[in-house]
Image (tube, rainbow, N blue to C red; front, side, top):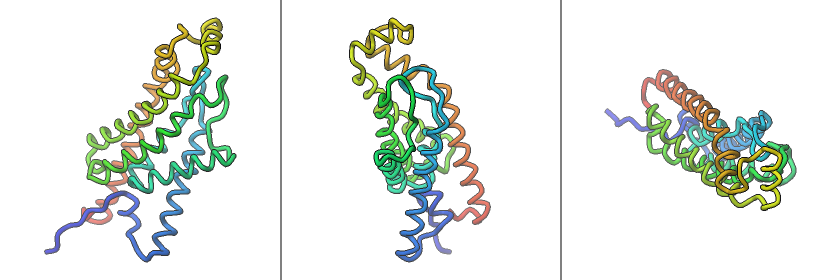
Amino acid sequence: MQPTTHTNSIAEALIPRSTFLVNLTVDATLIVGYAALTGLAAQLKLFLNPAVPITGQTFAVLLAGATLGSRRGVASMLVYLMAGIAGIQVFASGGVFPGSSRGYLLGFVAAAGLVGYLCERGWGRHPLKLVAAMLAGEAAIYVFGLWWLAFYFTPAQLAASVSAGKLSAATSVAVVWEWGVRDFIIGDAVKLLMAALGVSLAWAGIRRLKGGGV
């Protein structure tokens, strides 16, 4: 009896590797597809504060890492960033302070790579480990996003925001908590669980389709 081999990602489980040209075509399609999905998710936006919107992007980012793996996941987020830099409307525009959420975009690259790396090591096939992997990805997004927020605003902008009643104090701590964390915890938790559920159901379907040999 030959030993059972395990694929590294959902993408590889569904689309086995083939010739160089086929692999290149499949990789390009998946990478561009997830970049496009992230861009579409960015258009689902809601501003609860003047700096950072609630969007569907983190759902797409976590899904990219878990389904594509680390390399293709990172590549998809880099394509997404390059598309936005090139002027394609894929970012979540709007808000009083344009550019204040750019740190999160860098976090998307790190998150896709980290989630993909952990899922390649089997975390994606176990629901609790998958949630842990996605929590690590969310943490990466927050690290980059909150670091950017903490240093982005001028004292004059902070003072004006306090005067307008949009911020409790003209400090980086207030900015990070009120504009970067407080409004997002519940929504990000829901998106994470949705992504984890989708990935778990996908693996269950693949195992049933292939008789458990994945």
